[in-house]
Image (cartoon, rainbow, N blue to C red; front, side, top):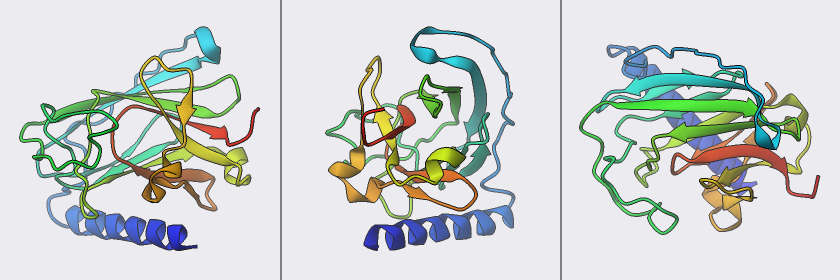
Length: 200
């Protein structure tokens, strides 16, 4: 219950920031619209219908971005760490300086063999470890949203095994809403997918 309250508080904070920013020169609007470039492909591991969404976040600005597949990404202002910052599981909660130059991001989305979505982000980066500067990833999956066994997992580079980061950090617990989204806070850009906590 406490995780749901924390998740809702975090969402309300970001939505309030988005509303304020939109009335102030659209601070959360993307500096460059997503290309929406769709690339149909059949790849190993069940990857099909791969799509790319590219957009840019300016220094001091946040963004509310819809990705191909109906997924959404919310980044609050000054949340992106400078790209020269340290990176890795031991670094997610380390302080960092915010990015001082525009950051162009590419989100690669597809549906995995289990029928659930995955998104990989480039470049690899992390977000400031602050309650006021963070990112939330929403993955659209109406089937998984009705089943509490499903969660958003972190998938490292070139790793077939994905992990539930909330097992060691409750602030990263997966939430769900009536629109068919699973969502959670993310502390870094890597790969994320939806999977059951049980063997499929």
